[in-house]
Length: 547
Image (cartoon, rainbow, N blue to C red; front, top):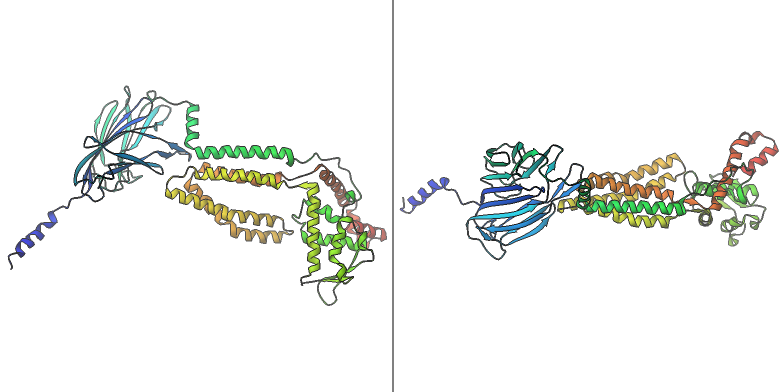
């Protein structure tokens, strides 16, 4: 065997007993002083073994500054940095926001540390975050945090309470976040002092937490007003969103009182004719406040053609050997029609076509399309005179609601994960919710239940991702934010309809139409129902009121 091989084999034999140097936290000792005003003075002494791997210029410490209360609201506890040292000498320190945490970097970016042991000391003061119940105060404190990338060989915490305090129940927990490990022991316990230490090595991403309580009356308690104001400021986004919601409600109520309140209904009198010599098509448009429900554009056309046929302006005949019917010019001239309908007839029978009949079936007819477009435009112009939708006022409220929803949803987000969920939730909610709402409105305006159900099923294709978006938004924010978000949407939906109102003249026409409707439903219902077998006078009555 060559001489150089023996030392090499001997080295290999003893290698398993050699432990390579490892970066660790050798000791994590914390002192907590509970002040009479509820604030905490915290001193952390962190002894680390640096090897130039992850610890090159120093260490950083993440300390939570935002907590979520049981109801979903936020509680913020700002930190006042008192001092930072390394081996007893002042150390460079900078802080950086990391969502719900404040990160303190201890060390200079320009100084490279040599391998070795270093003792860092971080002193800071935390705003009150005690759990205060009627008979006791409780301190719940994560001694080490759970975000360290190194094992913690030893951890301890000394708690000093105000004079006169008597420690009641106490507990400690070791392990990952939410774990209930009991790897700790009480080293010292007096009425107002506690020293506990972990009895296990804490692997990376695991920590040490303590909890203890004492009698109430020693720590100052803020009044109801102070607690309320702090809650509002800690949840500034939700507060601002709530104020914008109230402002939106005030705006809509004021606008409703100004333009959206229906005029007082007039005296209900049974009438025997349509009001103000309006055509049946106009009465239907006025009564339904537009093309809604059973009164759609196709029904308006049918009513119009029936009325013209009764007046003698057109003639309706079945198509020979085909489905559909034929529209021919009647004996009466176009100029004898109602003023608002003369142009409709001219589009149906333009001068260039003469008296050429119009066959309606399954093929497209440009003349019918032009006449229908003219009718729709004319009815909408007519409707605007007697009934206002006030969509401009509603849109002004929408311009106020959108920032309110965005502020409420986004202002409380902290960290990349929450922002990703929040933005994704908004995109899903709005991106699919707007088409879903439009489709629902279209479904509600269909003339038959079959069409409404069909359109509603199509709407569900756009609507099913909306709950997913709201769920993402809830995960990123809280239940109060989600409820406020829904409250904004509810206002927009309700006032979309509530801001619609007839004018005084329009309400008078509606009253007259209601009286005419009563006459048709009550006084002549049986006569109209028997019109086919009735004498000539009943046929005349039927023709006069049928449209």
